[in-house]
Amino acid sequence: MQHVAGNVIDHETRCTHYHSELDIIAIKFYCCDTYFPCFTCHEESGCGDHKVWPKEKFGEKAVLCGACKNELTVHQYKDSGYKCPTCEAKFNPGCGLHWELYFEK
Image (cartoon, rainbow, N blue to C red; front, side, top):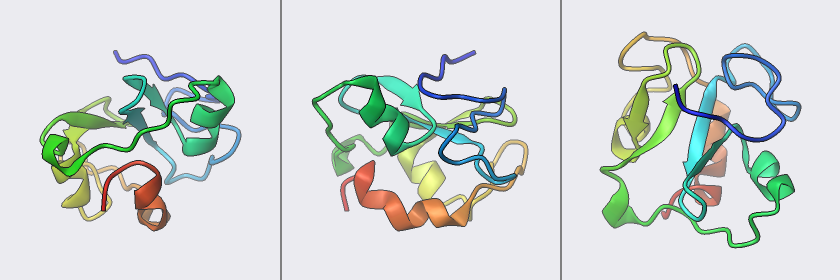
């Protein structure tokens, strides 16, 4: 199982910042190769070298489903329709509003 850093409050990767029923993904930050539930958790960790995933790396695994622990590539996540392709757990569509915090546009 992948370790998820930050202010995680349950086994499905919810954190103190985002903890609705749909907040069940963690994103591996490109700069530190570590999964966090959200951008704020990453900032609070003190990485200090924030870098987004470059487009040419979108084929690499970077998103963790908190429900089944399947790792998705950036492409799979982007094309998922906000649900896990493995277990069909629903993801928060609001995360798409913050794409530029994690991935190159």
